[in-house]
Image 1 (spheres, one colour):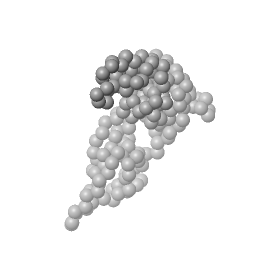
Image 2 (cartoon, rainbow, N blue to C red; image 1 turned 180 degrees about the horizontal axis):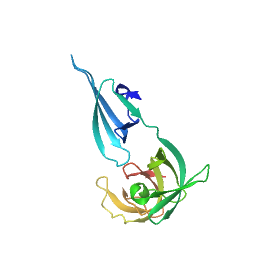
Image 3 (cartoon, rainbow, N blue to C red; image 1 turned 180 degrees about the vertical axis):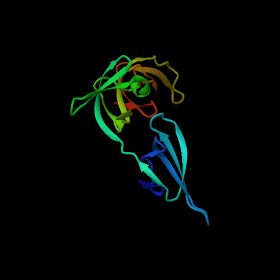
Image 4 (cartoon, helix red, strand yellow; image 1 turned 135 degrees about the horizontal axis):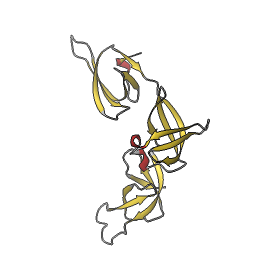
Length: 185
């Protein structure tokens, strides 16, 4: 148990059976009243963002999240198979829980699997991922007045906006948080 006064960004907490990750906190103390702590949190099971209010000194259960480095092996239809690189144990995660992450994962890539008491919550990817451009629209001469961009498709099938000078076969970096072009690899 931790005090609500000690909540910080990135902490994992358990409130009324729901598992949350703290995004941001604000403390409001006025004269003659107790402090009120508002915490903006993300539900780690559903991904929804909400705001929780606590009175100063309230006790909150801290959740112990386990992060295990694993390797993405292959797509098994409705599931995706990962392997622990130390114990060689294999686990399967349903594809519908990893819709966004699958845009950036290719076979044999390293990821971090997040678990809470043997419940698999999801996968953390590296911030920048290098992928090969498989198809790119041709650049049209004269389109360079401002920050001109074109569509390109990378090896995982994800479509991204890239600068005009990027061509097929090049390796580019993509930010896994927002899915935008970040530079050449």
